[in-house]
Length: 183
Image (cartoon, rainbow, N blue to C red; front, side, top):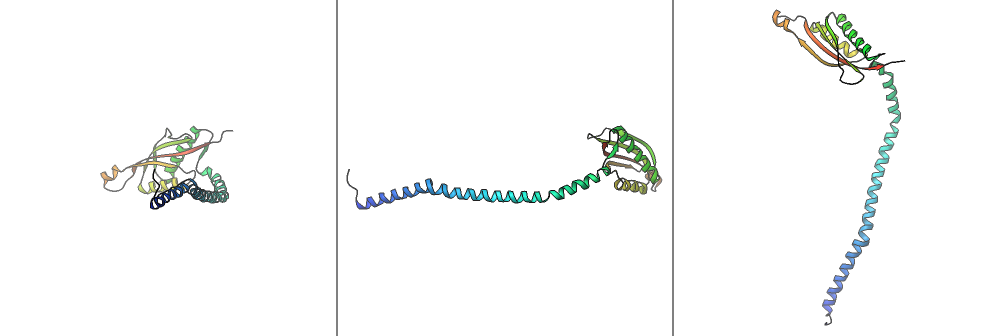
């Protein structure tokens, strides 16, 4: 093998130097730099988690107050009765009293199967005028225990026949949660 010329030695030395720098970069420097970057990202993630947790912990008192406030008003949102059957009967009587109080007449009130457990559902067929319908829906909306109105169906055939607003056949379906107070 012949000896390398000075120019060739410089090129080989430069290649070895570039290879050594690249090896040092990928073996030593890059892992250290990436470690710093990863740890900085972990620190910022931990700091964000810590701040979020501090906000959650600071809100516990507000949540407790809200839970107490909701517990105090729970009876407004449930029908309290010894059994589910009595709760359904209570809701039927409430709809009958409501129709009579606004001046309407009750045709039929019947219990329907509830869609959820610990709920009751009742359908009432009523004859009401438009003003009586507004009053009855307003009372259902504003008097405790609050109920969910499933649907309201209005048939105003008499108005077409007579030419003026008359009593309407109204089908009203309401449901409400039940809380049994068994001894």
